[in-house]
Length: 484
Image 1 (cartoon, rainbow, N blue to C red):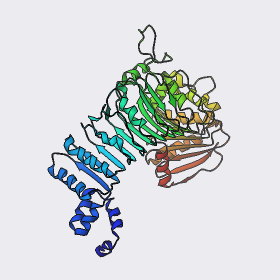
Image 2 (image 1 turned 90 degrees about the vertical axis):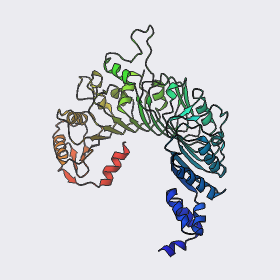
Image 3 (image 1 turned 45 degrees about the vertical axis):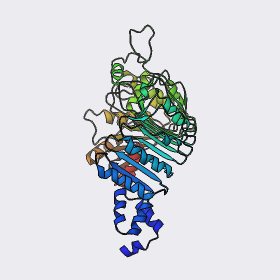
């Protein structure tokens, strides 16, 4: 076997070594002079360590020296301690000179060298690692003509975020952008402007600050994940090409508490004592900006934002699939208006049904039914999917809510209830109870109650014999991934 491997051509062996952890690949260099030369041509280098370990610093120095001026595809450096720039910067400059196309730096308290932002070869750049990684105000201009993927986590942008605008402006072909905890809630204004961008992920940890002003000028964006506190305003929102969006906008903890105690108010204001009341944030323009989306995921906290921080719910004419997350502390007040403004919605997914009972959710909910016609009666939804825990709550509200859907949704063709874990008694019990519902709005609805190991199917109104089968695990796993 060893002889067969040795007979492989050098380029193929070097390619194989590039997929091994750098330490393991380096260990092959002791086998012979040939293997030492083969390791020297490895194009993917990954290092993880700290400066307190002299052997780690010596190892990186030796590996980089061994490669000479040969080109490098990927260089990854994860530093578990605060680095000395005199140690780390020469490594970065070395790989930049050698035309590295993928650069990943995970270090703390380190001023990024200016040369990173003038690379003609970088196609992917990932920066992060902790506190103190900074984009210096000395960077007057950025030129990254081939950069397509940029990931930034916990990077400090000096001059109130001006550097962030400079960075994006120097990436003319950027297609994917990931931003995590960049602290823009402290900037005077925040703007993501990139005409070439196709995919954007933004995550900010829950805190007690609201961004002041947030704008998006990404007309070619197709995929969006956005998790942040609601901004005071959204002056510019351009998402003309958006296909799929996962939105998790939220109030701060204090604002959410105020919202819970002010159900009589239409909007949530800064203070009752203000001469001119001002909403804590206004997401109206943001949701107008995403109204062309086809697939939409809304967290429970986003439903709260829609209820208290939107002047009006826009019409989502293109929306065909909506996923809604429920939370026992948050009501469904915004859902009736949202469903009414989704005239072409085909698939509705609920991740849980337990929610706070409020007067505003009665239009579509079993917890406080109203005499007025339900918004569900005019719903175009054909497929309803519901993900539940291992068992139905003792108060029976989840079961009653599912029955309510069946009784009110005239176009419903398929109802699928998924239990997160395998618990066969819940599957049998719920399937039996739903088959006994006397009034079904839809003339024919296929019912499936599924867990990991069991699937029960029937047609409602229940005139046909039910059947059961054990579904392939792939089907169950695929659905859970599709809605999360």
